[in-house]
Length: 623
Image (cartoon, rainbow, N blue to C red; front, side, top):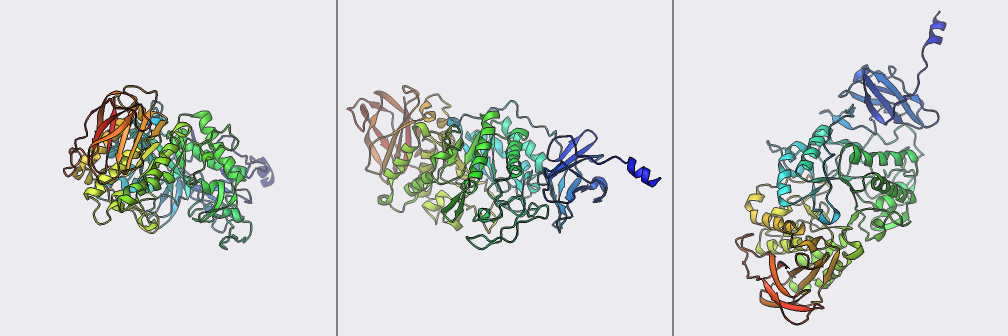
C-alpha cells in the first residue's frame, strides 16, 4: 500500500515560469538559481519554516540551473537557497533584489515585488551635448533629520536644489548591497540588491520617480570588475583547487562565478567574474538590464573598465581579456538595441579611443563616453600650480583641442570626483589643493571656479562632485575612513559661488538662446601662448547667438584692455564674468565690458576687439 502511494506521488518538476532568483506570481513564488556542481538545492525561508526538505528544487536537464514553484510564498518573506555541498549550506540568492542585514550580523534575502511602480515612461534623457552630470554618494549627500547617514528618503529634498542649479543628470555611486553599514560602494557583494541601509528598492523607486519629476536623469555606478564579500564565493561548494595568482601568490579558488587562475587578479581583490562562462555573462548582462529596464535608470557608469577587459597589476596591463571585451560590447549592444537614448559611461582611464568607438568598429566597445583623467590632470595643474610660471596652459589648450570634432561629448571631465577628492591618494577638493591652509581664500575661490568654468564650456560632458558648487572642503576618502557628510549649510554661506555655478550651467545649456555654441562639437583654441591666457572659440552652426568666445585668465594680472581675435565683426556682449561682485564680496567686480570687434585680423580670426578681464577669471562673450 505504501509502495503504491509512493508510486502515485507527483514527480518534482522544474518551474516553467521564466526569470532568475525569487519571482512572485499570483499565489506563490518561483525560485531559480545556477548551482552547476551542486548535488541538491532547496528553497528555504519564512514560507516553510526554513526547512531544507520542504521545497526541493529540480535541475533543468544538464544546464546547472535549479528551480521550483512554491505556492503560498509571499513578497516580504526572508529566503535563501540550501546547498548542502557547501559547508555553509544556506546561501543568499545572487539575484536577490532586496537584502536585510540584522543587528547580529545576519543577512538574508527578501522576496521583492516584481510590480514596483516606477514612473519612467514620460521622462526624456538629456542629449549628450546638454548633459550636466553631478556625482553623489547617498549616505553623505544628505543626512537624515537626526544627523545620521543619508538615505534615498533624505536625499529627496535636495533634488530640487540640483534642478535649480541646472543639473540634469546625477551619477550615483554604487548601490549594490555590501557587508557592514558604511562604504563608498565599491565593495558591493550583491549587485542586484539595493543597499538596505540606503532604503532598499522601495525608497530607490521613490527617488528615481522624484528625480525624473524635477528633470534629472539617474545614472548608476556599477561594479563588474570584482566583487566584495559575498556568498557567491564557492557558491555551490565547488572550487578549481588552490591555484596561486602568479602576481602576488593569492589563492584563486572562488568557484563557478570567478576565474580560477591568473585572470582572477585585480588590485582590489581576487574575485574577478569568469566572463568566459555564459551563465556569468548572463548574470552581469541581466544586472545591467535590471537597472535600465526594470528600475527606469537612464544610464550606467561602469567602474574600472580596464579591469574587465584586461589584467592590470598596478598601472601595468599584463594580459588582455577577450571575454571581458565581448561582455562589454554585449552590454552596449543591448542598450543601443533597446534604449539607445540611455548613456553608458566607462571609467577606463587609459586614454583609449577604442572605448568610445562604435560597435560597428571591430575594435570598438561602444560606450557613450568615458572619464578623461588626462584632462583632470591638465586642469589641476593650471589651477593649483604654486606660481604662475608653473602653469602649463599650452598643455591644457592641447587637451581642449582633443575634445572637439569627432570626439565631442565622448569625454566626462571634472575638477573633482570621488577618487580625486581622496587626500590619502594625493588628491583633495580643488579649493583645498589651491590653498591647503584656507579653502575659502580669495585664491581658492578664484582658481577653483576658473577651473570649473573651463569644464563647463568645452565640448565634453562636465561633471561636478557633491558639494562642489558651494566650496565643500571635506575630502572624500575611498579606503580606510568613513567619508564625512556634505555640509549643506555652506550653500548659504557661499550662495554667491553656488550662483556662479548656476549661471555657468545655464549658459552651457543655452537657457537664454545666446550661447548655443557651447552645445556644439566645434572648438578652436586661439594661438595665445603668453600671459597665461587661454582663449577658445565654440560654435555649432555659427552666427549670432551661436558663436561663443571664452576667455580664461590663469595669471595674477588684471587687464583693462586686452586685444583678442573674434570670428565675426560687430558687437559682442559679456554673458558671464566670474569676477562679478554678485558671486563674492571679495571679488573685484572688474569691468569686463561689451566690445565692438572692429579691429584687424588677429589670433587666426578675421577681426579683433578689446576686452577687460581680471586675475584668475573667466568671461564668456557672444553676439
